Length: 305
Image (cartoon, rainbow, N blue to C red; front, top):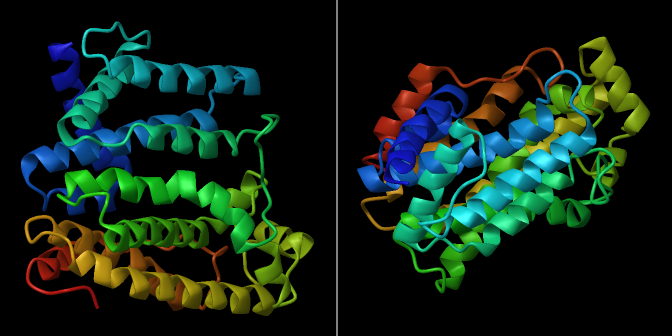
């Protein structure tokens, strides 16, 4: 198990460096033990997400469901340090590292059940499957497990007691803010998978329905109605970051810069979308690495703005 754990941390760091550049850069501002725990959390989430979103040719929904079930069962088995983890080697290593971090930081294990539920909501044919959401209230069922619980999982790593109600609420809100930013950045990618996460009632206020959004996706550019809707969601998202800012500033001094940096870099994606005049279909909005490095540097000396 010890070999699995160390190999898992190394693999988790590599996955985060490759696939989660914002998380990787921000995590480097944490004390080393905290950074490794974040890498393990991110790598597990990425493994689950890839099972759902990146199936190999010939893989069925039943296969995906079975793999997701096995990954989750492997994690819960790994919470017993002496248990055998019945997973492929790479996954077993990541799961062993995450279980080690869960024990070290007392990360609440029930959050992984909530996370798995949201992953299953993305699986066509699964009883929990959803690919359209009527309202933010309906979307909240998905974003709680896919985003808010990530904030909850991070709290003990950041040195915060989960009983701190205000900071916990802020962590959940920040996770949901990151998720809405992801939805805005990835509208085209999600549409290609026949998913629309932006709530239908909000889109309808700008004259955008399912057919119109999908037609824009097929054309590779956003019309004026879609652009106006996107700008509305940007305003909603910026308000989420604004309301989460006090919770960031309430974090311990040693861990605050990492979350500042992540929030700066994620919210900067919105600026990149604005540079495209809200055209989320023409190209994917990306924050250049020099700007992310600047966010990290600035986060060491100042608060979130």
